[in-house]
Every structure is written in C-alpha cells, then in structure tokens.
Image (cartoon, rainbow, N blue to C red; front, side):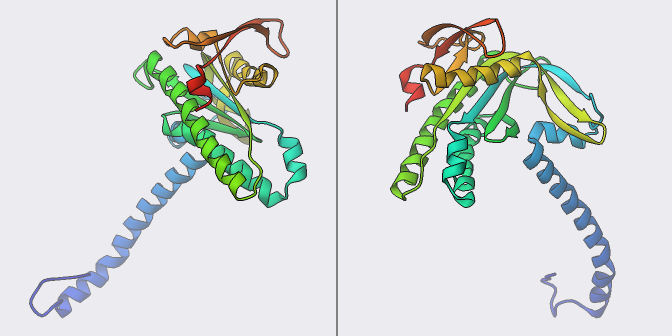
Length: 257
C-alpha cells in the first residue's frame, strides 16, 4: 500500500486496510484461479476447444459440424531417431520440430487440436456464422504457415547441425473438408478433437509426401481455392481406400524456402 497523505497512513487507515485485505485477497485469488484455468485449458486443448470446454461443452457427443482447412504434419524416421538418440536428445528434437511446425500454424491463426505422438493435427476454421475465417483467408493462412514452417525448420536444423545435433525431416498435408468438432471418447474420459473423412484424408495425404519425395502436399480441394502455380503430381490412391485423390505440391519458393 502507498499513500501521498501527509504523515502517511493514520491508525484508522491501517485498521481499515487490515480489514479490507482478506476481502481483496479473496477476489484476487478467484480472478487468478480463473486466469490459471483458462491458461491450462488453452495450453492443453487449444484456444477454441479450451473455450468450448470452459463454456460447458463437456458431455460425450457435444460438438458441431464445421468446414475447415485441415493441417496434418508428421516427423520422418521417428522410430530410428528414438532408438539412436538418448531420451533427452529425442525430446529436444521433438520440441524443436513442434516449435517450428505447430508454432508456425498457431502464429498464422491455426489451432493445434492434437499432438499424436510425433504428429500434429491443426485446423483453420472456415466461417459459416462469423466464427472463423473466410474460405480464401483460411487457405492463405494455412499455406503461409507451411512456408514459415519450412523457414523455421531450416534455421533450426542449421543450428542443430552446427551444435552437433541430429536434424529432423517432416511432411505436411493440407486438405479442406467438413469435420465434426467436438467431444469423443468414453463418458469418464473425453477428448475435444475433430473426426471425419476429411481429417483422415489429410493424414493420408501427409503420408504420401514420403512416396512422392515432397515435403508439402495439398489436395485439389485445397488447391482449387487459391490462385497459385501449383505443381500437379497426378492422381494417387489414399492408403486404406480405393478412392483417388488429385495431389499438388506448392511452388518451390514455398516448399523449400
């Protein structure tokens, strides 16, 4: 406490302040607890998913159908890396990789919903009722995020090599589709995530990066919404499906910056 009153606090002032302190402390504790709860929910679930959970969407099956750009990224050669590196070294590599890729997605407005081992699932929601981006903006943000991820990963790997550490490689798949955004699991243990064919297709698309020797692949559903000189790579069957998907790679300036 501080005062500019001549002579400082009077005895009556001190008595009043001592009476008020417990009440102020209670209000401060409640405000701090609410802020801490929000921070924890956002850190573990993502901002939008965390907000929904705090708003009471905690029942199994709670959720809604949305349209979104879906980002799926995965670390290459993770099993050999885990066997070759110490636990601390492998965890350090994972954190560097996630910081470069998931960090770029989040900084461009994407929301990382799940870390699946060494893979990351993120979405850029397309607005239907004002909650999200326009169709074009969602695609532009996702593509910009892949470019920034490439730059960040390149700088990080250069630093890792300079310090004698193992660099990492990865793949990214971008797709657009309708997904269900909500709670899945069992009544006693739920997870807020996305499900649907489009999410599975994004993961399969990323898996094709190894076969086609590309770091970033996008579906025709994604490519059609942006005026970009895509590199057409033809039709390919999705793993576990008989359906063909027309696949594109970004311009070299995006995928290798």
